[in-house]
Length: 297
Image (cartoon, rainbow, N blue to C red; front, side, top):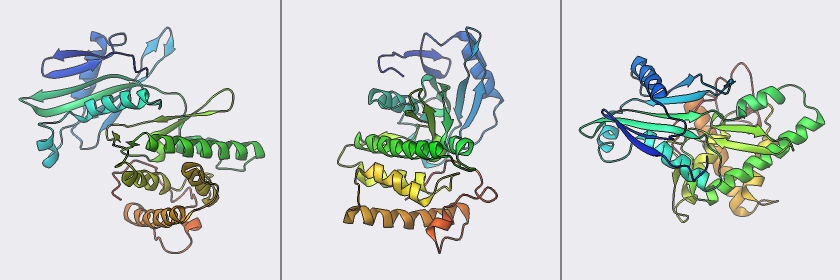
């Protein structure tokens, strides 16, 4: 998404909208309202695919609907932007800093006397596959030498990308594997799209390091097809930028293993003692779905 794109603010009844005028239309707005109106209330945001065609080609859009929160979050929403507008703001900030995120076509929030009722974001599709699907399609069964080299290159590229993200002050709100989409370039390079950015934040450089570790736990705690313990170390080596381990690096790895064991036990009900290699090995029957969680570390 170009940082030069300008959003137009519209008012539609109790809805305040921010839209890309070149894509937005009254027809699209009516379709969005229809989908929102049919959805049952759910505390988890729901995403619906909208089928569109541009010049006889499929150009799907994804509508993410936020229903009103309760309790303290509802009180906070009286004096802060909705998740939808925070999503838009962070997507623009990521793009301006050189990172890839889905283009946000529109965001909107519905309020009555400042009370937030509903909100939505509409994003364009991105090329590529989420990390678990990318791996499952390439590496879950026997690896050729070419595939192994490609996997290692992807891990190193991802490690450097997350390091750059953190160095720029960003902490992703839910950096689980499904929220990273990998696209391959004709020359063999990889591009990484960051998804679900409503809880992503940019912090002052002096504060961000204390929050980076949360993202490392979110990425590390899922067994993935074709990913070995050595692969996790390759990612961490690229992320840290060190060919060998300093005392600080070893301490961080020890902490990361302890936190990963804790999260596997709490979130997946997996017995955590014993071999870490065995704990993190992928098993089709027991791995389950890799999904986002509101991790607390």
